[in-house]
Image 1 (tube, helix red, strand yellow):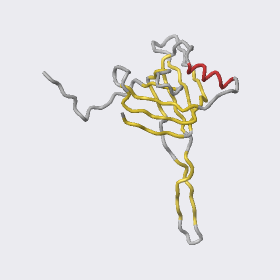
Image 2 (image 1 turned 30 degrees about the horizontal axis):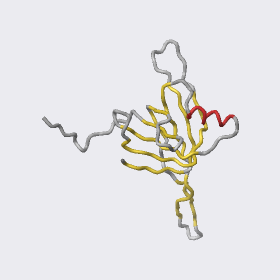
Image 3 (image 1 turned 135 degrees about the vertical axis):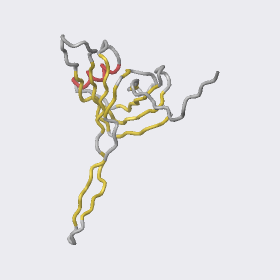
Image 4 (image 1 turned 180 degrees about the vertical axis):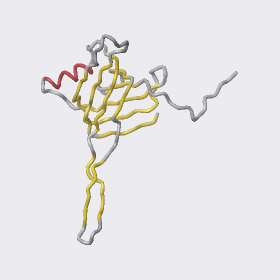
Length: 149
């Protein structure tokens, strides 16, 4: 019996990968991503006749937050984060991909340009809670493009 998946099937949003080296290999996996937004500042102009105009201005910076369970910090992401404290951070072009259930096939890929880490947030520790420790990594970037695979 052949089963077909409906073309309107919703893609689950629970597995993201990050490539910070540009080598096509996954440097870290995440369970949540926010801030993949394109925006522009607005410029308001009022002329002498009482007319009011709004125009697009410069692009807004992109602030991406990645969430994952706390893992041993020995990979390239942690080294990149620690380079900020040494004042030697390098801006990188990164890709964030939403993958299928296997984690191998990217479904949608967001490319961010000139990104660098700006914050690492440790999880809230509560001995009475029965939760996974989730850390957050924030990146600041200048451009965002989207590719549907």
